[in-house]
Length: 328
Image 1 (cartoon, rainbow, N blue to C red):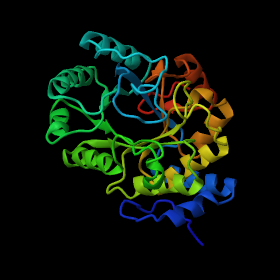
Image 2: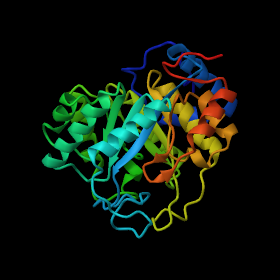
Image 3: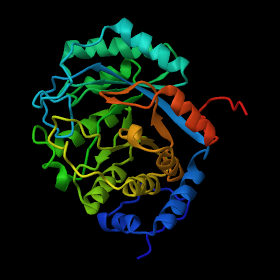
Image 4: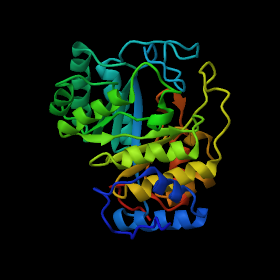
């Protein structure tokens, strides 16, 4: 079966079925990476990486039961429930991220859905971060009618709401909200004219076909997300998935490549789990089409490689930050 796509062709309205995506996963590894790199070069500057910084503005105590997440109130992890971070602290963190080279500042709150007074506080944070000249992104859980518009009016660029996994496997991981709930929030975000950041997690115990099912869902959103974070499960003690078997790193790289091929114009982010990856594996992810990373201190509650190590890795690979001047 020929699932190869000519670089440079538009996929925005291509409908991807799960079988054809499984076909991409099954390509010889080198062929898959070669195809992904060709498509990547047709749509992106091949030696640029978009740098985002993520701050947990409200940690822990979440009512959801996502099996991978230490922020759920149901699991006994080292994450403690905290109040919403004060505006001044958020702005200081954003300044520090900007001064270290981040272009986008992402704020995450461990809520099932934000209440009106909470959204008012978040709106102030968005406006303040925008004034620093950064792109803004928030992830706050499910949105009700009118909330996406309020965020947009505050200056929000991106809303993150992940699908996590395929519809078939989703029920094994989360029971407190449905796949449909997630799709509904994404629709509200789109209708408000916001950019969508939406991806998922691999290594949850899903099969390759279920991984393909996640990519199919993402690629068939119309339009597909502007930003697609691909997370490798970070196993946290106290969560139900702590004893999961590790995913083969080459399967993770395949997932990045397949995301790139099916969503050519998206920024594909090498997201959670990067700290556990060797430099060589990260470099292969960039070759496979990943062109965005979370950079700096903390990835919500999972550790993230320090800024210096990241800067050195990018330098060794001759990669530069999107929009940065080339110093070489």
